[in-house]
Amino acid sequence: MAGLTGSMETLVAELVKLPGIGPRTAERLAFYVLQSPKDYVQALAHALVHVKETIRFCQVCNNLADEARCTICRDPRRDAEVLCVVEHPRDIVAVEKAGGFRGVYHVLLGALSPLDGIGPKDLKIAGLLERVKHGHYREVIVATDTDTEGETTALYVAQQLKPLKVTLTRVAQGLPMGGHVEYADQATLARAFEGRRAL
Ligand SMILES: [Zn+2]
Image (tube, rainbow, N blue to C red; front, top):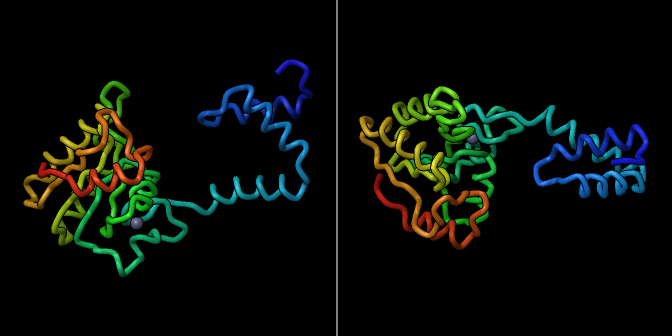
């Protein structure tokens, strides 16, 4: 970043914090912003701040929402008796793109990771148990990632849900071991849902 003025250096320093953005890409983006019309830069800055100010977590499922409940929880056409448990809101985007699933979701907002000090209390597991206890679900599909954290989380969730006598399944078939739901291609993810097994 040698040779950059103070404000450009600040912009590059902020951009490089974004996932997947290295110093060279950050510099290229900073120059792109510098050369762009002011209208565009203002719209970009506004969009960045606006998303932070307006987006919140759905009261029911912890998906991203712009109202108290997310668009999926508000949709009367969804099958409210089939619940799919995922780690992150971005996993919902992937499952929705794959198509085929018409139920509702519960987002844990992470995965168990004892090495990183992330335990059950750091995730939205208590809320899941409450939902299942008080709701009517024909099936709970656990669609956490197939890496160590995702598998640990799936086992824990299964243990907790077992006494509630709900049909529990796990997506697996087709998803590579260690795979992330959000990166799975649509066909693979669709197959993983079709080939889910009892937990
Ligand atoms: Zn929701």
